[in-house]
Length: 365
Image (cartoon, rainbow, N blue to C red):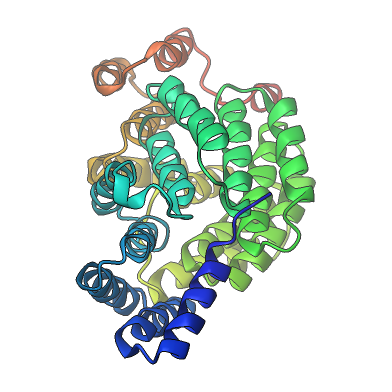
């Protein structure tokens, strides 16, 4: 039986109305207003309101509301602003606090700890894998669980399979999660994103395009401009591979989304656009973009991301028949920050041995 965080919020607000307690009613008003701001992509305003609401919860000695607003604050920084550093600081504080006695009965504890597990995955998924799986076991066995957190943890398990190149297992788990997510547009958005990347990994470009289009549909429903823009750029990439005449217009539409919503450039942006340029016989543009990505990579605070940027750059240099020694040396040095660098070192060795592609089907092309 799942717990329902939002029902708890509504029941709290109804009780506050019956009591005529204006300050307690303000908690729900602030939550609703912040969510409306987020729906309109006014993310800074939403962040300000979450912070204001958290301070009010502290004043009212309402630890569960405090934990909820702190979690929402971190989520907005991470998923809407692509600011993992700020989000991580907030999430670690919330997760640590959730183990204190005053927070033990809060229904949003699982959400907080699930967010932290996903953030650790984004920072260093190989290095933190054991710790993350331990966290998930604790959440699933010892803490009241809401449905959304359960679905997110199931998807995270599929994501680990993807990173380990177990594509069939990742696809099966993602489809199972999707089957339980039809009333949850956020989880459907994530599932379709994973499915289009899996289809690409297996060389089924037409299927990848279909899934990327569905990702955009659900991203628009979720009002997540970053995921929407990423989905459009991947569509352009797949259309270019399929030699679709509208590929350039699709790419321009995705670029405009980034510009209009002032979306930070990160992994999916660079991978989709660089791959497009290379497929479009413009490898130098792809190389310039990869070098720009490498310069900005440390700003995201993700060990995994920074190492993978080095690997992508090395593969591209190899395909362009350009010198690799210096790039490989820098890439190997970057793995020192990873707790478990074995997989990355194996990939770099493969590049040194002359394998410049991420997926097997690309070598056969």
